[in-house]
Picture 1 (cartoon, rainbow, N blue to C red):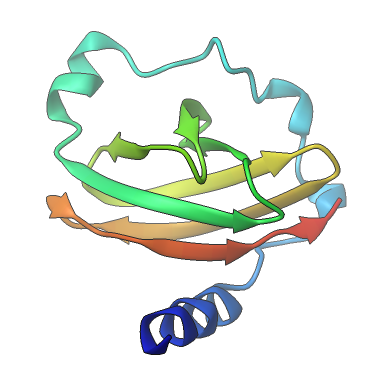
Picture 2 (picture 1 turned 90 degrees about the vertical axis):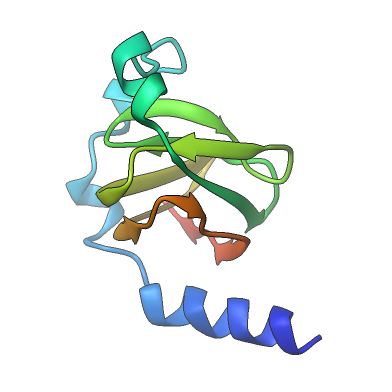
Amino acid sequence: MKNLAIALCAAAVLGCAGSSGSIDFSHYDKNNVMSDFERERATANIFITTEPPGADIFMDDKYVGEANKEVVNVLPGKRVITLINDEYYFQDTLVFQPGSNGPREIILKKK
């Protein structure tokens, strides 16, 4: 329960960058995935859960997986994370360290 409270506090602190009007959702395509070169260097990983559940996860505009289902591998460093689930979203810049960064629960905002 303590970990859930910490995760919820972290999600609240992260907030949501900009407003939905400033995000062009049309260029987020699940077919735009990391290259083999990027996948080989994706040495950071995280398990993300969202409320509502099941958002598509994009790191630097590239699809990396689905929340609530799988651990996703990402490139270490500062990354723009975008989560999209129907009419909900989240976007912010996060810093990932090599290895496990996880888990994180994120509350999505209405578009």
